[in-house]
Length: 160
Image (cartoon, rainbow, N blue to C red):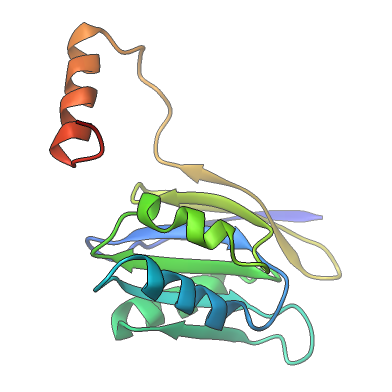
């Protein structure tokens, strides 16, 4: 087995969701889940088909995000992996709906941070081992950091 690290290029102002699924209709079901969650969400979905023609299947309502999702899925190249790039929404707005898509088995991450995907390759194919999401901690939050966190959540209207 060999391992590889794929550096993901996240389009400006976008978030990414990386997950694993199990069926070709995933791209259509994810499309429906996303448009039913957030009015005016912009997104692209790329899905690595793991049998048959083994193509990257895609959907989306934003040409740039759809192309980025296709290219990222192809670069990762791990069977049944999906990539979603979103704008005009946050992952928290769509995660519950994505988890309710019957084909979705696992979500590795949802982030806007710098992202690396760790991939294993065998004679059969490729699979995602995990992700590196952002940077490692530089310390433990103090009182002023707690205040900043709480203020930020209220600014985003996630807390009262």
